[in-house]
Image (cartoon, rainbow, N blue to C red; front, side, top):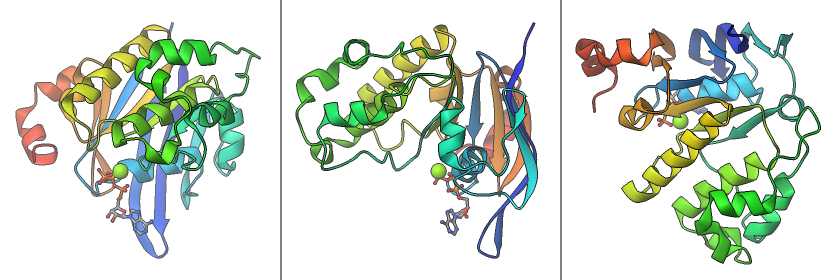
Length: 237
Ligand SMILES: Nc1ncnc2c1ncn2[C@@H]1O[C@H](COP(=O)(O)OP(=O)(O)OP(=O)(O)O)[C@@H](O)[C@H]1O
Ligand SMILES: [Mg+2]
């Protein structure tokens, strides 16, 4: 039996007077990975922010774990078990890598502390020699790893991950892909915003393709792969 972990219906979001999200709907089953795909400026990050409550949609509703969370502040959504890795990564530049990790530490919704520093360094070996380094001095790829690692320290049930591959070297992208596969195998539910469809292929089961703030496809990623016209229209660069 599948259970819906997160769903949104008819989200309409604005920046000031300008509407950016139009009637966005999506649904993620527990343990599933959903890809949000679309070109630059399509509305992927705006969708993420609207789900997290960082941006308050003018219309529409979001349910998470059976509760309506529309209107909740991001801190409350986070406490309910949603881990959010924004596209600008937001590490604490002045703090060391380890202090960043400790800042993210909290028990999960069932009191679990599955993620310890030890497990983080096992999962992200590249962070081990960087423990005492100021986070602001890390490379883009290292900061991406740290940002994801810090979010995991909060023991989330659902992970919202905004373009983890953006601007990173292929080797780092591959490493992040491996980590995400392991997380998925461990049962974590993931919403992954990406421009890079290839990156999502082995990870996601379903996809929403966004164009100009509208969902133009919603369904199995295999069905998307089989529709070259759709890919050419909305995803190819
Ligand atoms: N803070 C903001 N104020 C005004 N407009 C914004 C703001 N943030 C984004 N936009 C606009 O909203 C639209 C959607 O942007 P969004 O960041 O959601 O796209 P995206 O799909 O995440 O793109 P990218 O792949 O480049 O990250 C774009 O037209 C963008 O210019
Ligand atoms: Mg974005």
